[in-house]
Length: 345
Ligand code: NDP
Ligand code: GDR
Image: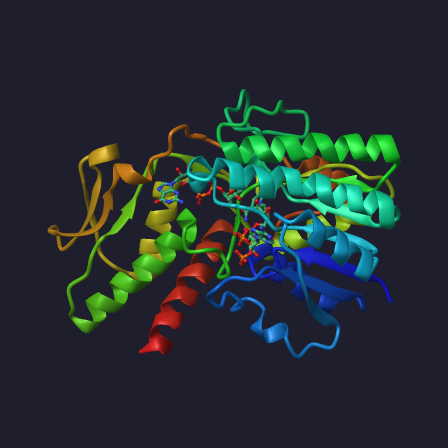
């Protein structure tokens, strides 16, 4: 039976990929976790009794643990979703971000080259590598112009993946994933931050209790959001293609953070009015109680204002297309957060 190592299995993508592969293959899945002092297994609790799912200890910041796991498992596929994945924090932890998102990729490649050169390797690349874009939409030939320590680390990883592919004939790729979201998205990312806070405010209104507003940063920036479950199929197709090639996966649609907020408020049926503009913009309930205020603390030292992907090459070569619509994605996330709060009461 073939074996797949997935790093970042406690996160959104790793847990979704484990679900996808358990459903669509008969392979054995090795989910890599690191020790944390608090429980962070909520995304994989449902997998713990699955006989084809095994947890292994691997910290991307420790090259020995990477090597040991690769030697022990001898995988056919290695999918690296583990990362310091929050762009906003990469200015606070630039070195940790670099070690986890760039150096670790080199350690994985070295171990694959030495111990299992037939293993197919996928590293999670990002639209943040395009950064300060020169044209829209971005496809595979757009230059790399990162704007954050996170984006720069992903670019470094991209180069070393290519160097190992070309030098050692490894099947090693790094697709460009544009933003992808869902109920398992971390609470720091803007989509989940919006849906969970609007659900909280809705509950407070329904219960007749006072609430604190949602605080956001720059709500004029625009992103290309895809349902994370759609991405898993695209990544797996990329890893199983005849020749190793990097593809853009995206929805091809551009929406501002403001539009995401509007769509969430629509799902919640909370009536709102708007006061002020940009940094002074406020969303009010009954024309007086703030639902959303802008807090400059959430602005970034350098911003990527607009990212929109052109996935036509993936469509042509792999037959991949996103299925879930923007409005349905927002509704799924809002409904999930609303139900979570309801079941907690
Ligand atoms: P998450 O933040 O949900 O998950 C990140 C995972 O990485 C967690 O499981 C985390 O483990 C793990 N991790 C962090 N540091 C280490 C470490 N030192 N050793 C081992 N594991 C570690 O991210 P996503 O699932 O959203 O993203 C998956 C990958 O895709 C990341 O590489 C991200 O940069 C990239 N990406 C994501 C996009 C998106 O829109 N979601 C778009 C483009 C790229 P723990 O739970 O222990 O913290
Ligand atoms: P991003 O996602 O940086 O695109 O990285 P995030 O949701 O953090 O930010 C998107 C945009 O929203 C603006 N924004 C805010 N962001 C956050 N987190 N919190 C706020 O309060 C807020 N207010 C406005 C940001 O400035 C930004 O413009 C995600 C991650 O999954 C990366 O790992 C991945 O590589 C990229 O997507 C593609």
